Structures are given as C-alpha cells and as structure tokens.
Amino acid sequence: MGVAMAEPAAGREALLAEVTTDVVPSWAILVVQLNSLVAGRLGVTDTDVQCLFVLGRHGPTTPGVLAKHVNLTTGSASRMIDRLVAAGCVRRVADPHDRRRVLIEPTQEGLDRVSAAYAGLIARTRDDLGDFDDAELGTIVRFMKTAERSTAAEIHRLQATLQGRT
Image (cartoon, rainbow, N blue to C red; front, side):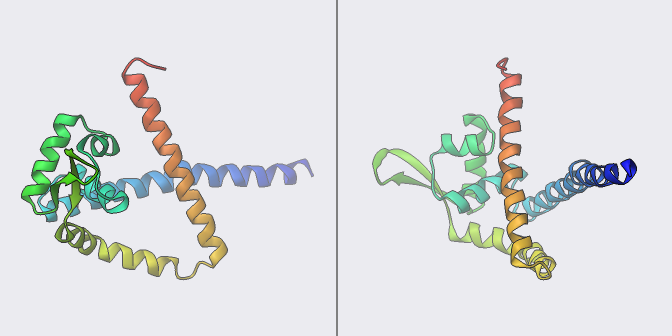
C-alpha cells in the first residue's frame, strides 16, 4: 500500500522532469532556430526580430526602453535600429508628447513581413490546439504566462549576478 501511494508522486515527478528538462528546453531550442531562420529571411539578426515583436506587442517606444526589452546596450540598440530602418521594418518618429525625444515604431511593411514569416507556425499551432478544450487552453495560457514571468525573473537574476549584485 505504501508503494501505491508513492507512485502518483513519482509519476508527477517524472512529468515535472519531462516538462522542465526535456519538453520545454527542446521546444525553446527549436524556437531559437526558427527565429534565426526568420531573421535570415528578413535580412536582419535574431535580436532584430525580437525588437519587431516587442514593437508589435507594445507599440512605439524609445530606443532606451527598446534596448532593455531585448537586453542590449544603448549602442547596440542604436545599431539594431539602424539595421531595421535600412530594412524598412521600423522608423524613427518624434514623440508627440515631447518633440525632443525620438520613438521607434514598426512600419506596416515590417509587421507584415514578420507576420508572413511566422504564418506557417501560427497555422500549425492553431491546428495543434484545435483538439484542446477551453479549460485546457486556459491551463496552457496560465502556464505560458507563468513561464514568461519566471524566465524574465531568471534573466534579471543572472544580469544582477553578472553585474556583481545578488
């Protein structure tokens, strides 16, 4: 009887291990590879693609805020913005609230190019999720949002460690 009670916990531990050490890392590697291919098709770098996602999600922002979102120095962010301007994906515009500041905003062409590059994955993912009921989809959303927060917290922790803060 003691063995039967231990088995569900062992089964749960095996599932947790599978998710954390196999499934999520394997998927993350494939996402990185896909982003690299998308960047190559757009003629930009992987970080440039992250920038376009951030701008598409959050809207126009300052170069400094954008640099923080994609974990770049301001100098590297400036070069990234130059590449994206040259590729027709973003433009510099005056901040309507403070004409001394510049905002970086995505162009419709840039957003369309990124959307087209990810259209296949989006279609496949929608098909993959088709058999999940609403409760399961809610659980997936909850997990992904939690994982996003945990990943951001780990990035901040590692950055602080590298900068000598703990």
